[in-house]
Image 1 (tube, helix red, strand yellow):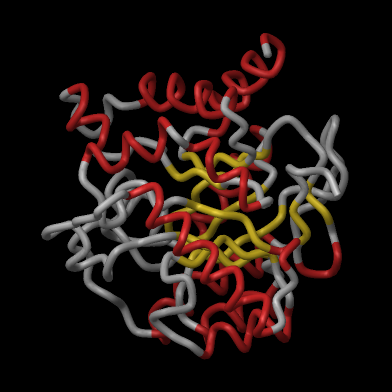
Image 2 (cartoon, helix red, strand yellow; image 1 turned 60 degrees about the horizontal axis):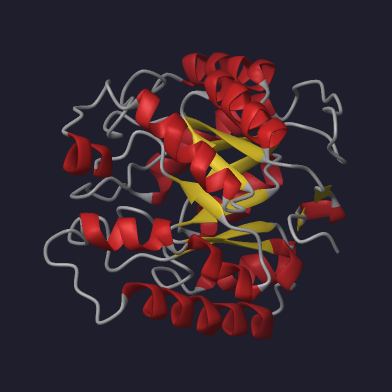
Length: 288
């Protein structure tokens, strides 16, 4: 299979293609970049439709902020936020995009809770984006084995409320590689096919600025694991630490970093600004 291909629920395949874009639909009051803007379900659906029209291959719907220090929400509240949005977006007319196989947009649920994942998949999602790597709710592995969705395996050091208190590593790249190797073996052993999994190094999740930069500089090392890389870098605080950019002023830096990462082989880009990212990645692909 093409190295940038990713199988999701129902046997659909994302790929081969130069890149894939996951548009962020935060149905939350407190996300770091756009918390509250799409908290109303109707606003979130409208935003998702807009991102689809701009060229998003994936719409990643989340009902719980995972920014540093964020408090957890209950299963019932998270379901109340995301299910109506996923169910409505699942009715979007699909149209094949140029140079891609499959139908888009595919819906993704950003959760680490087994019940939220299961009900979201039943409502029309095809991907589970999990910051916990099945460590916060072990029942999630059972859902993955049964439903066999696409799965974003992400590295984090601790839960969101504490992950940035004192992150420490001996060698961050080696430790994240070892983490992915162990989790891939665990998930495949539980019954999730390897072709369903992509790898997210978890930029900003239990990492200092230097940890983040080291991972980004050496991102090609993750090719040794044989799975595509999924990158969530959009508007993150590393741009403040490195460049002094406050929230709302990180768009250009995000696009520059996205182009560099695409040139290094990153296949999937999770972003707030889909239209600008489409232009960035088309240019990067044309100049490669």
